[in-house]
Image (cartoon, rainbow, N blue to C red):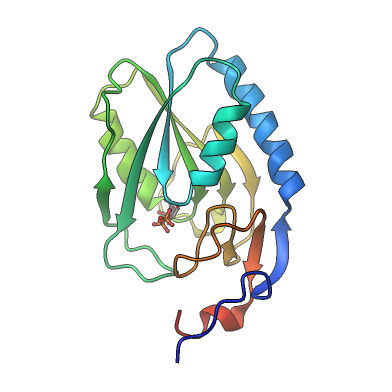
Length: 188
Ligand code: PRP
């Protein structure tokens, strides 16, 4: 039988609060605005997880910015493990040639998704290509990824909220929380 989702009740602990997220977004937005002053900044959001972070971050940036959206998914993985094979579900809608591109991610886990995306986007000849992630989980890294802006480094726990899902739900929580183990040990 499928387990009923209890949006707040399924969360064991709040790992990063709404206030902490919002303060960090302001800080990152300021840094990016300084670093990219006089540049041609394009933010590329990697859907779906980065949607809330992207929406908040772009409004914390005080210089002109273009945005584009990609959606990728990993082939053959499970809800908790990625396989390393990446499929593009939605590609960029405009050229990024000559732009200063900043990839906006919600989380870097194994690094396999970004490893693929970096190579893919480099092939489109941006002037520069850097990475901004809200969350970094270095304990799970399989490939080394140079990350330029990191919001929070987190331990190896199953987190949801602020864009991150389990079974496509919990993305609308305003904080990042740790899912209770009994939730993901049962079928989603
Ligand atoms: C998540 C996240 C990253 C990726 C990180 O996306 O948004 O893109 O996994 O994992 P990795 O470093 O191990 O590759 P997911 O494939 O779950 O899709 P979603 O953003 O639509 O939830």
